[in-house]
Image 1 (cartoon, one colour):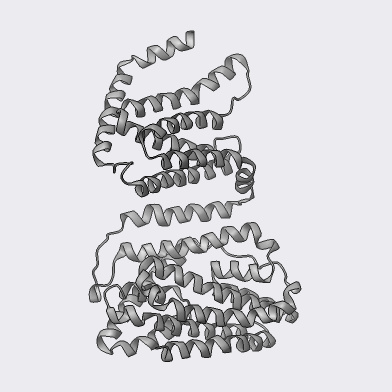
Image 2 (cartoon, rainbow, N blue to C red):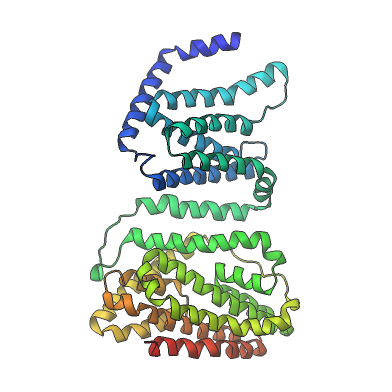
Length: 451
C-alpha cells in the first residue's frame, strides 16, 4: 500500500502534470505529421522495422558489454512498445504515450525495490515488456489494420522463442565484430543523413548524399557476408567458401587463396573453384546494386549478364565434383567496415562518375568501354553503380549500359588471373586462366554481338 501511495503522489506532482501536457502536445503534433496507419500499411511496417533495428543495435551492444543487462531481445521490445504507444496515441490521445512512459518507469524501478526489500528473484524484464507490448497489440487489433497487430504479435513471439539462439549470437561475436557493426552504424546512421543531397561539380554529377549512399550499400553487403562468415566460415566447404568470399570481396578471396597455393600447391584446383564461385557471386552483387539504383537497366540486361554468370559457374562445378572433399578452412577475413576503405571507395566512385561523363561528352559512347575495362581491373562496384546512375538520365545508356558492365566483368577476370600468377603457384594461375577463358570470351561476345 505504501508503494501505491507513493505512485499516486508521484502521478499528481506538478512536474508530472507538466510532462503529461507536453506529451499530449507532442502526440498531437505527431498525429498531424504521421501517415494514417490504416491507409499506409507499407510506411507503418517500415517504421516498425526501423524501430526494431535500432532497438536491436543498442541491445546487441549492451548484451555484449554486460550479459546481465537488458539486451538483444529486450531493447527491440522496448522500441516496439514505444511504436505501439505512438500508434495508439493517434486514436486515443497523448495520454497513451505518457501512460506508457510511466508504466515503463514503474517496470524498471519497482522490481529493484522489491528485490531490495524482500530479496525476491528477478521477475524477468523481457517478459514484463512483452506483457506491455501485447497489451498494445490487443488494442491495435481493434483500431488499425489487422496485419499490423499480427506482425507485431508474431515478432514478439519470435523474439521470445529464439532466446538461446540470440544469446549465442551475441556471445559468439568478438570485439572486432561488434566494432564492425558499430562502424556500419556510423557510416549509415550518422554520416549519411548530414550530407547534402544536391548535385554539383564537373558535369553536375557529384551528389555527396548519393555517393555515400552507395558506400553504405557496398559496405552493408560486405558486412552481411562477413557476419555469415563468422558463424559458418570455419565449416565452409568449397562452394560455401566461394559464396562467402564473393559476398565479402571476390578480389580479396582471390588474393587469400593465391597466397595459400604458394605454400600448398595441392590446393590449386580447390582454390581455383572457390575463386570462380566467388566471381559468380559477384554478379549477384551487381544485380542487387543495379536493381537498387536503376531497375530498368537490370530489366534490359539481366539475361546476357545471367548467361555470363552461368558461363563463370559451370566450369567450376565440373572441377568441384572431383575435388569437393579437398577443401580447407577459409582464410581469416578482414572487417569490411573500416572508415578508410569506405572513403577510398567514395572517392573512386566520384571520380568514375566524372570520368564517364567527361568521356561520353568528349569522345562519345564508344569511349566508355576502355574506361569500363580499366575500372574493372580493380573492382566492379564503382563502374556498376556509376553506369546505373548515369543511365537514369541517358536513354542510350539505359539500353546498352549492361555491355559496359560485361566488359568490366571480363576485365576483372583478367585481373584475378594476373593476381593468381603474381601471388600464387603457377599451377593455380594456369587452372584459373583455363577456367576464366570460357566466361572471358563469352563475355566479350555478349558485350559486342548481343542484339
